[in-house]
Image (cartoon, rainbow, N blue to C red; front, side, top):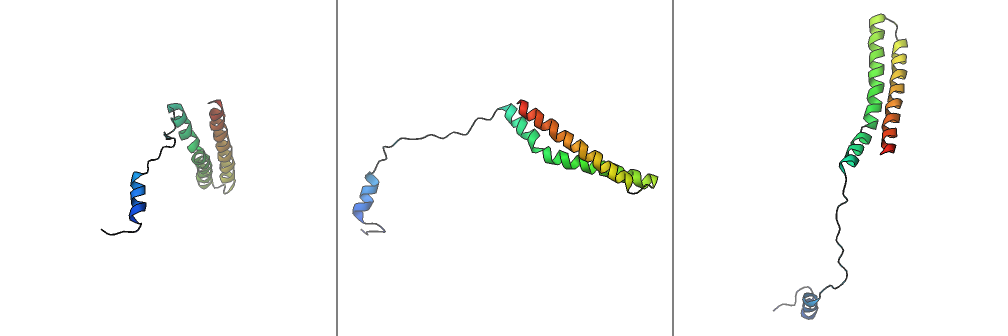
Length: 99
């Protein structure tokens, strides 16, 4: 019989040791369907903001190309998209505060 990494007496002591302290049970937090919906809405804030700006600028750019008024409608479309993005963020955050 070999001694192993730890001596026989220490190995025997570890086999006989029983932990008698408090047992703590951990459970995952319960997330309601409404909370998941709110998380989904808040996760799209940045995407909605950028998308509004891109659509506004893209629309202005296309109108500029069609009418030959470069770059004025691109600027106007950008700022309208920026305003729409800010309005989207405001609406989503107001909705989040209500819940």
